[in-house]
Every structure is written in C-alpha cells, then in structure tokens.
Image 1 (cartoon, rainbow, N blue to C red):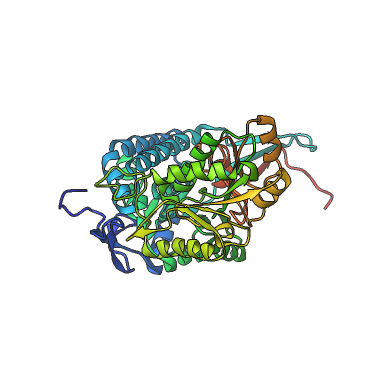
Image 2 (cartoon, one colour; image 1 turned 90 degrees about the vertical axis):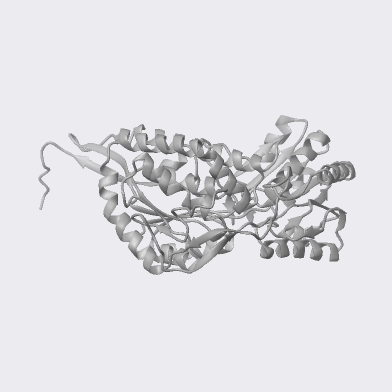
Length: 486
C-alpha cells in the first residue's frame, strides 16, 4: 500500500466487477495520524437492488456446482489470502489501528476459516430416516438458503467477514458483503480479487461498503434470504425485528459485558496476565473483552496491584511506526464514549489506579477499583482499554454479579481447582466459559456465540456452520404410488 498507484477498488464497489456506487464518497483515514490513505466508494439502495438481482440469478448455477469444485475454489482463496499477507497486514494496521501481532493473528484465523469452509462441501448432505409406511424412503438433506447478506464490523473486519462469507459460499449460497466504512478495505475490498483469481464465478460474491441506509436496504430486501450480522446489540435488535416481520433467517452475534471471576485460590500472576490480555488487547475493542473483573475480597488488593502494574508497562502509540502494545481507538466518537464511562464511574465513587488519560485517539490502559454494580463501568459494554474491578465475598455472589448483565457472550474463571471451576461454569449464563484463561478466545472449529442480549442463539464455527448457512428439505419417495381412500 506504500506505492502511489491507485488501487482498482479505490472509489468503487464490487458488484459484477468494479464500478462506482450510488452512495457517498469518503476518505479512508488512518486513526493513528488522521492521514488520508485512499478514497472509499459506497453503495446505496440501488446498488443493493442490483447486487441482490445478480446474486439471485447466479445462485442456482453456483449451488449446482460440484462439491469438489467449490472446495477447490475456497482452498485456492485461502492460499491467495496468505500470499497477500503483507498488503493485508499493512491495511489492517493503518486502517484499523491494529498492532502487527493482531493483524497477523487475524489473517491466520481468516485462513483457518477458509480451510474449514473448503472441507464443508464434501461432508454428508443429509440423512436417511426410517418410515412407518412400507416402501417409503425418507431423506432429509441440506440445501442452500439462497442469497446471504453479511454485515461485518470494524474491529476484526477480515475475520468477521470471512467467518460468514466462506461457509455461506461453501454451502452453495451467493453472498453480498457490507463491510463497515471504517474498515472497508481490510474487511471487504481486498477480497474480490482473491476470490476472482481463485475461480469464483461472476455474480456469486459482491462487496458493497456503506452506512446504515445500505445495511437497512439489505435487511429489508426481499431478494436477500438471510442476514448474518456481527455488531452492537442495539442494531442487532432492530435487524432481528425487521427479519422477523418478513420471516427472514438471521444470525446475530452481538455485544458482551464479559466477566472474569478470580476465586480466592487462583494463581494471581496468571489471573492478572489473563485480565490484562482480556481487557487491553486491540485497545479493548472486542466483543469478548474482559469488561468486568470479579475478584474475591481477600485477594482483590493484590490482584488490582498486579493488574495495574501490567497496565503501566504497556506502550500505547502508532502501530505502523512504533513497536507498541496498544494502537489508537477507531474514532473520536468511540474515544469519547470510553472516556465518558470512565469519568461517570469515577464520579460515582470508583478509584483510578492507572490510566484514565488520552492523547488524540490513544487511550491509556485503565484500571478502576471500587466499581459497584450500579456504575457505568459495570453495567455498560465499554469497548475500550478499561479494566473495572468489583469484589465479591462468596461464590453465590460471584455468580450473581456475573449474571447481572443482560449480555451473555463469554466468561472466564480463575481457580486452583478444576472441579470448582467446572461447577461454577455450569451456573454462569454465557455462551462460552474459559477456566484458567481469559474471555477473548476463538477456535475456528468450535461453535462460537452467546446467550441473552449477546445474540439470538446463532453459532458460528465447526458443525454449527452447516445449520447456519443451509436449510433442510425432506424428500420422501416410493417406487409405486399410494392409492388413498378418496
């Protein structure tokens, strides 16, 4: 991305080739410096109409493509993704404020998603069921949904796009991807050339960056058969309501306010390490961020001191030009929201151990103690580098505090007893619980998703992808027709 040659995607959308969209044109801005990196074209309602018609027309042929050819194309896309790692990393670092380590991990995770998706078409398509009617064959088989709309967020834009795009394509669907305008290059516009070169037919994959109007057009479009959305709970609720009115399939992976419980027998050094990683990785801009540190009163002071020491040792700065642990927050709006939560919590009686300051979009890792269940740092999803600590006196109170949020995405437990941790995990209302680890975990082959306000029970990954991106059809057959009484 360092050369001055204009990229093929600049100022354009991808829908049956590269073309100008009917939406607004805006700048791709580096959050660390405010420098303009490129020009972004966006789509509007007319572009969604065009893409839906094209994807709908292309789907029957793509769905009928042999399983081995679909697998071959997706495997080649995985290879090409890796071969372009340097360019993708550069965009992830500069456009999204990612550190090099985060960018590298994200690309590898996206590569794993593609490899897993490439294995999907060769799995059994259905099952045979017994029949009470002599001579009848009962077959239940998976068939494509049709056109899948993917609305991806800005924090892990490459991974969270590929997580839906790849299995949807593998199962014979066509896809329209709407990346967030703040991460549209990394999370969208670098992908069409990869899939084109891999051999994906025209019309099967579309990339249309855009704002809320484009997203709403996708959700309400009758030619789009499913929506896969990753983002805030507020927006997810609106999408779920709109899809419910039209009986459209929808997969929602939403926000979280994830608790890490530190019991009195925990290894404090390990717990503080997990706490720092879970709260400060990628500036805390992760749905699985450790948003609440619930610590037994007998060890709370020692834990807070260890966590604060780790926070003070983290370097914040421009990840493209410096060796840093944390880069910038994505926008001024996000920075101001994080700082407002910190200020309101301090005004309500919390104590600042370290951090709580910012310069431009660089927010210092922040540790708060004395946080109570009524403070914003406890009740809200922070989505920033803030570690609020709340004390408890027994396991019942720890469980009550962990479950005191409407969210239910992830949780973690630190304890010296595996049995104690497993027993406690069964009482926590969260889709993912990690014992002696932190809340930010992802393995491509394990179903991923939350409970409560963190989603609609949808899951991504491994066998869950078959249910997410197909529908079932019952076919019964007899050699001779039945003669009924009338």
